[in-house]
Image 1: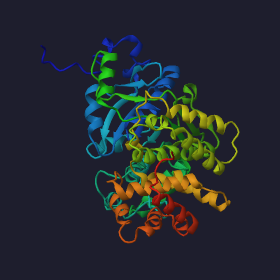
Image 2: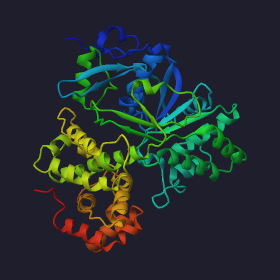
Image 3: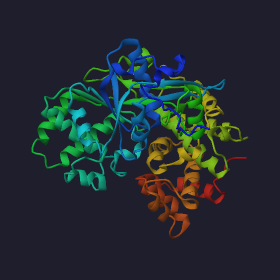
Image 4: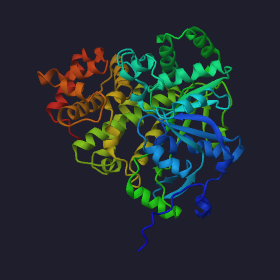
Length: 477
C-alpha cells in the first residue's frame, strides 16, 4: 500500500485535472489588480467566480491578492496550491466541480504586512474588496462609527507596524498610495451591512482623523476626490466546507484540494456604479450595476438574512442541524413565509424586484437538501447581525403602528439562546451577564446592549418578547 501523500492541486498538477473542471482562463496570465481582505469561503465562492467569468470574456489580467486577517488556515491551504482551489455547485440533480484560477497570491495581514502595504500603494491595483464579516469592521454599537477604544483599533492608532484592524490597514494603504502618486482606487465592502459603502468610507475616514499623522488632512481631501466606496449587495449561500466536501472535490479533480468550497446554484451581485478606477467587466458575468442598491440591500438583509437568523435560532431549539432540516419540519416553510410577509411591509416598492417571487425563491433555496447549510454557522455573531436584520425593520413597522409578532418571536428565540447556551459571539460575556438579576428585565438589557434604547423602552414589544420567552420561544407547532 502506498504511503505517499496524494498529489495536491497546483499549477504543476492542473494539466492532469479533467478538462471540464479546469478554469476557463490561464492563471499564469493574471497579475494582482484586486486586493481582497477576508479571503474566506464566501469570497472564493462569489466575487472570485464573477472575476474569473469576466476575465474569460474580456481579459485584463484581473488577478486577486487575497488577504486573511487572523487565521493562517487559508494561507496554508492555498499557498501550496498556487492560489488554485475548486468550487462545487450543489445542484439538486448532482454536484458540478470546477477549479478557480483568479487568486494569484495569498497573504496573512500581520505576517505579510509589508507586501499588503505595497499592493495597496500600487497603481496596478485599482480595486479593494472586502468580506471580513460584520464584526470585522470594529464598529461602535451605539454610534455605528469606528470603535476607537477597541484594542485592535487603539493599538493601530498608536503606531503598530503592521495594522491589525481593517480600518487601520486601509488607512495606512491609502496613505502609502497618496505618497506613491495618488492613483485613484475603489473600495468595495461586500459584507451584509446596510449602506456598506457609506459605512466603510466613514470608518476609514474616522481612523485617519483619529491619527497623529501630519498629512491626515491632505489624505482626507485626496480620498474625497480619488477614492470611491460603492455600495453592494451579494447573495449566495456558502456552507462551511466539510471533510466530505474535500473528498468529493478530490474525486472530481483527481488531486487533493485543501481549499475546496461549495455553494448553492443561486448567486447575485448588485453594485452601485460609482467606481473611481478600472474594474473587471463584471456585467458580462451577470453583475447588475445600478444607481442605488438600497432596495436590493434591504430585501436581502431583512428577508433572506433575517429569516435565516430566525430559523437558525428556532431550529437549534428544535434539534435541527441544517437549513433544509428546518424547512422539512411542519412549521419551517410557514415560519419563513410569515416572517417575510411581516418584514416585507418595511420595504419600499422597487421596480424590478418582485417580492412574492423573491420569497418563493428563498423557500426553494432554503429547502435544497444538497446544501447542508449548518444553522449553527448562521447563529454565530448574532449581536453583530440582528441589529440590521431585525431591529431596523422592527423600528419602522412599530412606528407605523403595525403588529410584529414574528419579529418578537425572533428576538425571543435569540434571547433564549443567550440565556441557555454558550455563544460564539464577540460579545458573549456581556450577553450572558444580561441575565444576571431579574430575568424579566433581561430583554431590555439585551436590547440596550445592541444599542436599541428606543426598543428597550417599548413596553409592548418587551412584553411580547417576555411572553414568547415564558412560552419557551419554541418553533410553532
